[in-house]
Each structure stands twice: as C-alpha cells, then as structure tokens.
Amino acid sequence: MGQVLFTKASDFLAGRLQESNKPLRVGIVIRAAFSNVANVASEIDNAFHSAWDKLDASIERKLADMSDQNQRAALQLRYAADMRIPLAKQLELLELGKFSETVTSAAAHQPGVAAEVQDFLLAHCYRQKTTMIGLAHNPNTMLDVLTQLAHHPDRQVQVALAAQFAPSMRIIDESRETEKQAVYNALFDNFHSDLAPYLVPVCKDTEQLDAMYAQTSKTPGALRHFVENPLTSDTVLLDISSAIAVRMLPGGARVAADAKQLLEKRLVVTEDAAPSP
Image (tube, rainbow, N blue to C red; front, side):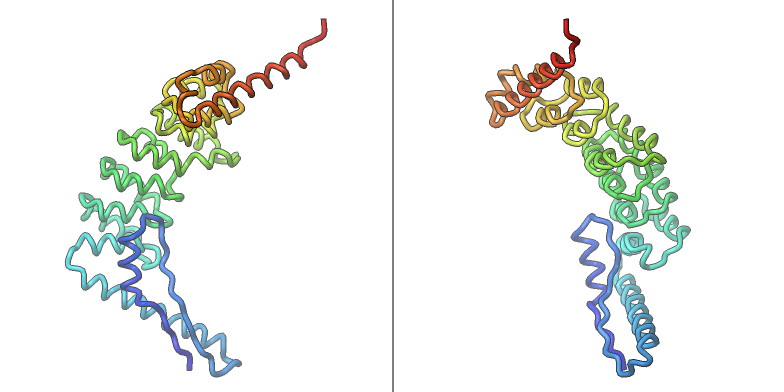
C-alpha cells in the first residue's frame, strides 16, 4: 500500500501568505512506498489524488477557521489558481473586499493574475499603494496596465515598476517592442532621480539621457549609470568629468576620471575617422 506524507498545508499557506510578497504556487511533497511494481503507475495516480484531496480539505478547514471574511478572501485570491477558483468568483471576492488592501494586494500578487482582475484593480484600487506595487512586481501584469502604473502619483509604485520592467528593455521582442517602449516612455515622462538606476542603463536615446541627467541627483552612484551608457552625450560626460563637487564625494573622483577617459577615447576615434588634408 502506498503511504502519502506531506507538510500541514494550512500552516504552509497561512505562513507563506504572511511572509512573502512574491507570486507563489502551492506545492506538496508526496512520499510513497509501492508494494507492486507492476501497478506502479496506478499507485502513483492514487497517491496523487489522495494527496490533492487532503490538501483541498486542509485549505477548506483553514478558511473555515478564519473569522475575518477579508482574510479568507485574501487567502482564496492569493492561491486562486491552485484552488481552481473561477474568474467570476474572484471578481465577486474583489467586489466585496475592494476596500481592504489585504484582499486586493493578494489578488495583485497571485501568479497568472487574470486580465479582468488587473482591470478591476486599476479601476477600483488605483490609490492603494501596496496593491499597485504588487501589480508592478508581478511578471504577468499586462503592458498596458504597466503603462498606467507608470503615471501613478506615488513614487514607490513607479520605482517598483521600473525595477521590475527595465531589464526587459534589454530583450528584443519584436511583437511587443511598441508596447514596451510605451511603458518606458511613460516612466520617462514621470522621471525623477530615484528612477535613474533603472531607466538610464537601458536608455537608447541620447536626448532622453540628456533630459534625465538634468533631473538626476549628482551623486557618484547615479552618474556612473550615465558614464556606462554608450549613448550618453559628450556634453554630459564633460559635465561629469569637470564637476568639482562630484570629485569631492566618495567614489566621485573615479567616476569623473572614467568620464574624462571616455571623452578622450571618443576624441581619438573622431580624429582617426577624419579625412586626411
């Protein structure tokens, strides 16, 4: 006979819901001893279904134990895919709990968050910072939703979005390039110095770099991003290399020296490319 052993699912679900903001999936460990090798496929199938039934029952008990309706809804929404909760039911839970960030944030963090759920959160929960940060961090959030998040009035939402989204600008995906550029441009339109570490390294436009430089705090760390972007203009590099205030800061002299060295290399290349008299 096969024996199935697994961690208490109710404790696992509740604990993970409290300790992490990352999208999660429910996982169970099955340990089974098979007495008849000839029927191993059938025994594996039975062990799986037995474990799944026990997990479902454990989740239901956990939900029943929760006296706070919003906590129940949050747990259901966070694990909606694993609990096979229909979209209509998710929207119903959101409608009832839309004023609770515990509920709406759980929906925003769920893996594979449905487009309709994203639209609901934007329409009814836009001012809920934690929920919008959850959408910004979620890799499954649609690009048109990210574009709207780029205009969010809270800077922490914008920074969360930039941190999650900016690396994707290094990946060429012709089917999504227009939408990705729209998200980037929206962030650029709302630029502030906290976005520099994410937008400057992946910027592909010299004029945008010039504009961002004008609004960026002149710290060595922030200026390093401009020095390392090959599209940064000579004007910006010259300003960095000659900034006395920057040189006086820890690490500033190195950044200024690197900017000067890069300018000199560009000058040499320009002279070599010039036609002979």
